[in-house]
Length: 430
Image (cartoon, rainbow, N blue to C red; front, top):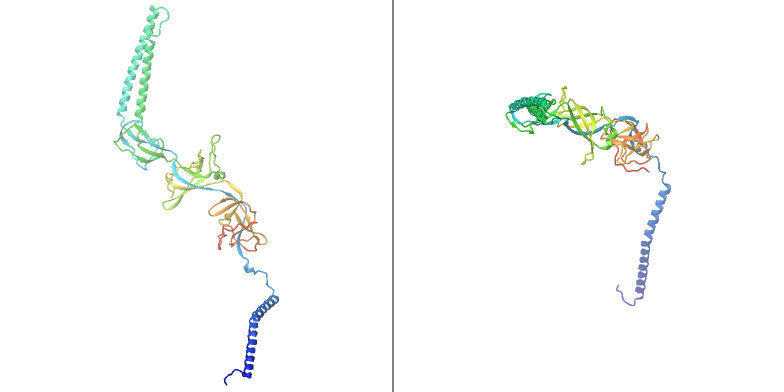
């Protein structure tokens, strides 16, 4: 039925529908506001109920969660603090073969070659001596002439003295008695005799004898060569003793019995030194002694050199090569004994000189050490430890002062099967 204006029934129906729609719209708006509030209140209530009714937590840590550390029980020891260095072997005595006379070489020793051996007193080089033989003959002739002149002057002086006593009066002059002439003749005789001595000396220098038993390093001459006075013919060195200059820091001499001042005392036997090097595919060793320290520090390095000597380096020994000059060797010098020293494995002490200790209640502590010396495989501690202390060598990455640990004692010198202590552990000492 079509709606027509003015129909009272229809107008009332429209008004009721409109009022009903307005009421429904207000209810929906209220629900949108109240619903979130109710959700929040419900969540708070549930959370409060969980907190109030939760079971109590266990604060005790499981025994398996306590870290296991490996420790060593340290005891003081007496050790020798050996010093390590290195150097090159050199002969103690080395000279150049230089002639004192000129001439042609007519003979060479068969061993006068690079590497050749010779004995003390061997004639190494012979120079043609004929010119010097002539000089000897001429000197003898001058001596004979000078002797004749002396005899004549003596006779004339005696004759003049007799004549003056017979005919003269007063005191005769020296010239009257021919005393100056006699003195001149005697002086010429002495000069001739000196010339003969010199000629014999020059003749003896035609044969150059070795002053020591040694070996030839270099040779610069050949048979038949004419050599000049002062020309270098060869280079020789003695084989009785070799030396090694060992550079040392000045503080290392505190561990060595080496005299630094030889003016008032002489060191008979210095510290023992073991020299070693790779030779012929094997590691070889030689024993020597420190004989002295040099008189000045090296200006470039600030180090002081100690001199080691090895006697009879060419002695024949089973499977032992000679200690030849030029070899580069490592040296271990025997040091003084130090008492009350604790030896710890490398890595036990960190860069701040701290180590980890475990007390009798198995609590961890960080303690500072007084390091005597650090070596590649061990650390020598002079202070900071007591006999019987347990020192951690592995098992802790992040140490905390007072933390509870479990311990496993490792025998000194035994290698750990777990990672070693982190040497970069923080400085946590309170």
